[in-house]
Amino acid sequence: MKTHLRTIVYLLMILLAEVKGLAQTRHYHEPHRPQFHFSPPYMWMNDPNGMVYYKGEYHLFYQHYPEDKVWGPMHWGHAVSKDLVYWRNLPIALYPDSLGYIFSGSAVIDWKNTSGFGINGQPPMVAMFTHHLMAGEKAGRSDFQYQSIAYSNDAGRTWTKYQGNPVIPNPGIRDFRDTKVIWHEGSKQWIVVLAAQNQVRFYGSPDLKNWTFLSNFGAEHGNHSGVWECPDFFPLKVAGNNQNKWVLIQSINPGGPNGGSATQYFIGEFDGKTFRNDNAPDKVLWMDWGRDNYAGVTWSDAPEGRRLFMGWMSNWDYAQNVPTHPWRSATTVVRELSLRQTPEGLRIFSQAIPEQKKLRAKGFTLPAQSLSGTLDVGKKSGLSPAQLELELEVMLPSDPQVKWGLELSNASGEKYRMGMDAVQNQFFSDRRMAGKHDFSKAFGKAIHIASRESKDHKVKMHILLDVSSVELFADEGRVVLTDLFFPTTPFDSISLFCEGGKVDLMKGQLWVLKGIWK
Ligand code: FRU
Image (cartoon, rainbow, N blue to C red):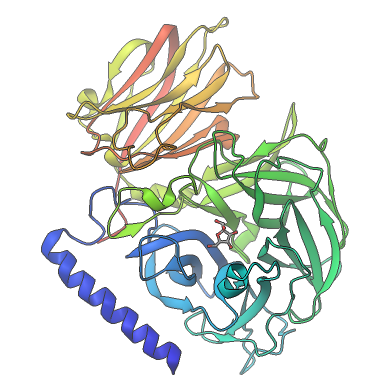
């Protein structure tokens, strides 16, 4: 009853804000509002949570504070999609309770009803998340985070918290959170991985309620410049053969390659108990080199065995200060992960899902040509870069001394530049002059760099530009870079440039993208 009352109050708040908002600007079309990314209708959002596919719907839950545009008592917001492109907002799924705020976690379909929560022969949807007891933290205790479960018998619309919570009590570790549950067929049990300060811990369970500690991993592996958060763990087939590897995705804050929040990953073996890293302990592999892809995890039960990933498109360095209203934060587009053999070893490749293509509206093809100096693409095509997709393929000269890429600009004299520095063999993203940045010292400080391992003279860039973000998938997704920017007026000019020589533009395809919000 209490929950229903809260839902009604929440809906009334939204209605009121909507009426107020209508007088100002159309909802979902406010300045800087992403047009083809998910963002919450109102107020604060951080990590995506509990992503699971069930009966034709992709569920997205998310860290949400419905009463303010900054972080606060965490709820799980909720949206669903039939195609991972268009999203429908639903009422809040989980509210804080006497055990604490509802922190990050995951959801599964308990197909065999191992938990006994199913009814009428239908499997329950079970969420496992971290309870964070603020009073405990404030009192200086170290055991204020523990793991709990809740279940839904109506496809995620309403939830019941388990009476026996917490299901994994705190063993005396201050940072002890962010549960990712999977069914492990090999050992026929549920496995949960969670972050514990500077490492992860694995637990096993027959029924999602009773958990046994299995092992830990990571204290001596990867990057440790910050606290570990939001792990994900899944098997992935190596493209082109039948080998199966285990991937551990591990967010870290701070410590990212360009500062603040970022996500690393490990590839290895798992025997139902212990994870073994295939790479040297000091090898660090990044999911994304940009500043704005954090806490990303993948969908449970995605059809056809796809491994679909989505991140929070922001950074704890400035997320609570970005100049947006009446909401804060968006997610990345959904990305499909694959594991590919490269001369340097196995690597995760991330690519925007092909479903995104349905947003392509007007297109334009640049003829193959040699590129040096500046090419005004906007003038040529009549296309504006605010919502744009580009596929560029370039052949570098044999002794490359060039820097090439694209530049967005507007009449206010703001510009954003991104591209490749062939001398350094790296990609870059430069938002220092791209608009508002005085809301945070950390935002517009430096050029962001993404190291390129490949020495291939052929370079492919797939770029998605929304009103306030860029996502670069370079070399077929081997190098990814996601960044936000906040131009005072939308960028309306776009050009390609090449400095220090010339490159051969072999492919230049552009599409204006439709928005997903009415
Ligand atoms: C990551 C994180 C998680 C935590 C949640 C709280 O961004 O700090 O570790 O569960 O956000 O909102």
